[in-house]
Length: 165
Image 1 (cartoon, helix red, strand yellow):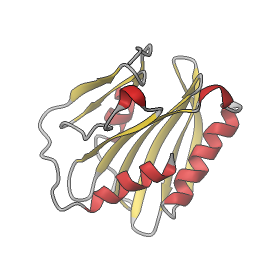
Image 2 (tube, helix red, strand yellow):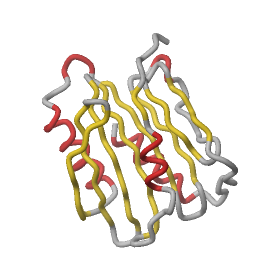
Image 3 (spheres, helix red, strand yellow):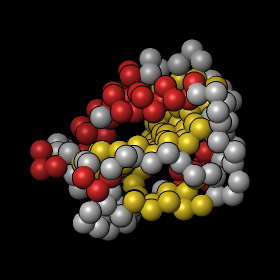
Image 4 (spheres, helix red, strand yellow):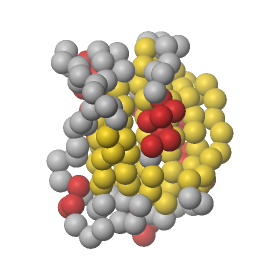
């Protein structure tokens, strides 16, 4: 799970940023979510046959937006443990430290919202566990330079019934 996220984060170094136009909703029925981006994101290669995937958009040379899902299947652990593990693993993966966090819910599903920072970047995340599926939205910016549409991005995320792929 974290390897795919790390690869997506590394793509922030790409010299070709997306040209934001207007916000549009992107649906992923097999994964069970929808989210809005200000320009077309790079979708996962094959979400119909995968238990994980990442949508990524480089808004500018310094701002990236990421939506991630991972289906743990029947071996999913207790929600608090899964959410804490995702938080801690993501923070460790980018060499960051936790700045703040709070418990949240979305349509009754448990989640956490947290911010972290490394020496160069800031990370704003919302993570939810819906049944066996972990969902994560992430905004990556230069450290202490928030993205003005971060809340709009996070708030656009919705869990929808999963469709068979």
